Length: 147
Image (cartoon, rainbow, N blue to C red; front, side, top):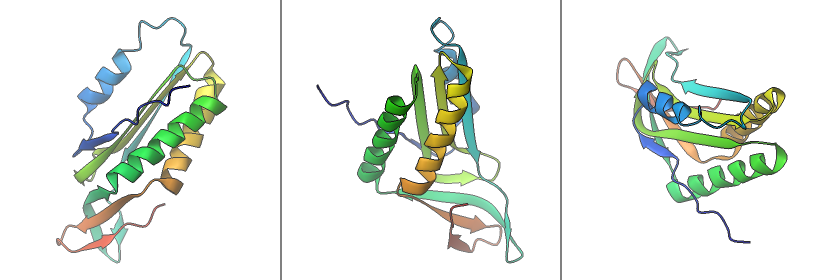
């Protein structure tokens, strides 16, 4: 069996609502789909040590991260009855309130999309080498701790 090509999941900057909408729209004509589920990771304006986060600058070991995203994708398709899946993550600076992670899954069954999405997002947080530098309003920064 031929291995599937490893896809580049990274987008420069914030993931726009137009991009998200176009990605979802493509699946309206697929009559085998009974349910979709979407996760949008958004940069929070957290307050840390009395300083407010204004943005996060994302960096990654891109080849390694794309391979890990590929492994997560393949594991999800093996474990769940999915029709399709999209995963996109930002690189570069994403301001508070903007989207930095977009995961979209489709399946013939409603329950499957909830379970699959939880599995995928938890695997991304645990295993993918993407790093965020929190930038505060006073322009100081610190490396983000995954929560």
